[in-house]
Image 1: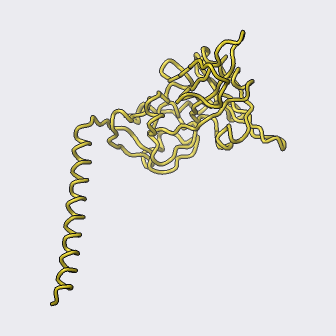
Image 2 (image 1 turned 90 degrees about the vertical axis):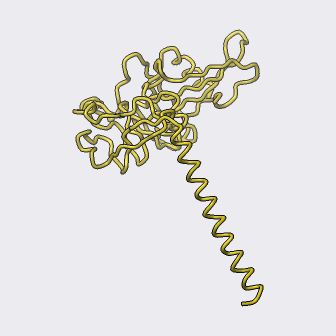
Image 3 (image 1 turned 90 degrees about the horizontal axis):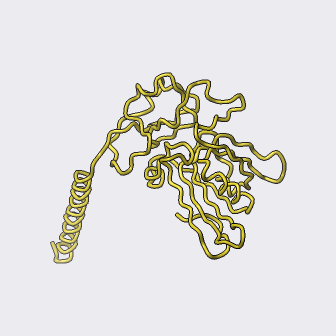
Length: 247
């Protein structure tokens, strides 16, 4: 065996050993990081679950997973028995954490498929072009972030705001070539004025929030539309109103 062959074989062996060492280190680091972090058992969706599915039929579609406590969604379900007699109010997708806010009694939906606003909230309807309404994919029961800005009276500073975990109660698709969607939201009464003012200023954008994302997990999606547990950020600015809000 000549020197070139020996050198080539040695290089292959060294590369294999190096790859094994790196893989072992990465796995060990991941295990150490997980061990150092507090974990919570929650139910996670494993397959598509249509809207209107009885909670009693969920056993085969969900499973228990260990999730870092900091990423547990507000209202995450830890016991399926708490959902007895309820049905899903929106489609559940694989990877979603099971949340109590996405269940209601079978008769909770109105005849047009919309949802009643939770107690302590007010419904505000927004007329939005498709790009401002998540491309028209929203359905009642979805949870969204609301970004907007508007000017104030007497030449005061402009106001930019962001609301998280806002419940969509009704969606009306465009009926003509204008492409305007009408999306009704259940918001905290303290923020209803800001949302309406931003709608008038034409600066409102919606973002669909899915359970399990950092934003969704950290801002209280179970609060159903800007309740006491939801995050709202209202910031006065000195410049002209900018589209969107502070994140």
